[in-house]
Image (cartoon, rainbow, N blue to C red; front, side):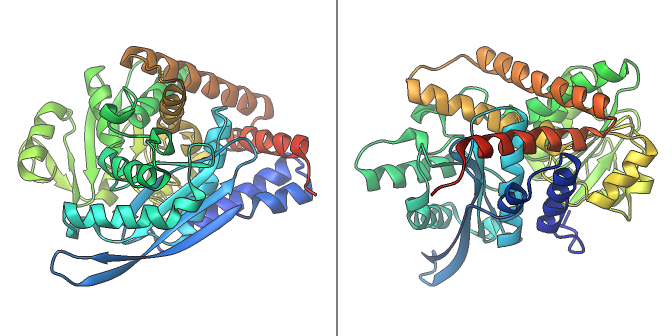
Length: 417
């Protein structure tokens, strides 16, 4: 499930911004400002490996915009990490925070490494050194990292501890997605997947689609697995699931509970006896009602968009659909819920964690989930209202809403000096 190298995510997000700027008659100077990152930091990370050698990794932290509040965005570990990718994801975070109306700007971080070939001790040393290198630009009122691909609550604990040691006192608010024992929030680990489900339920209600609940989920990580499990419990028929090493399909529906047991035992979803093994390419093109791309960027392209048979696409991943593919889906009448709306659950509950930490007053999981549903539902219907009024796609409406919010804040704050 590799990134399509023929498509550059940075070029994609710039194109989306340019089209939005034209659509909303954005002032030229604001448009130019939003095309550039506020700050781009590249760091060298020497790490002593378990065998005594020293490897030098490259890491990044990009802050796209801080006009509406502190920068916010995850940190990913992957061999595929590049500066362009991190810049693009930081920009997407700006729009994501704006579309759901939480007071953050966008940021992203990453280290080019293969975490699957590193021990826990090596990952800890990598994380702590990376933290020390980006320490001048992060903080609870400046830039708040969170988990992303191949990072988790333990990674955030190491970042928090390293930052706190430097400051001389505990600073839990420097990251979100922490373990609950050190100030994390109930509901954070499932938040992105749960937000995807809430968005899908709103979509089905709007389209008045009660029957036909055949679902395909591409990507079975922290987001896709949560969405699949929640939908399975709600009675949806999950007919196909894919992850990096392959996909499985059963026209009658997968038993997600048994699939999870197989995955836990074997380390993969493939070779599940109750399903046929297929490729991720085949998975995307299967007939279904709902397709949830929850893997990497650029999975739906101009090369396969015409063969997508889903009625609804809910983008759980960041940037899974290229602009050319998006136009094809629009022409086919596919209802696409864009990433900056559909997968905003994670940053919404990260915001809740940040707020709870600042108050030292914590909510129950039920309270967190209800507040998440409220915010993402309001955002969905606001985007839908613009879409219907302007006769545009949900993506165009979401971008118009987000860019207008950031532009308004930019005008009000003005220029300095």
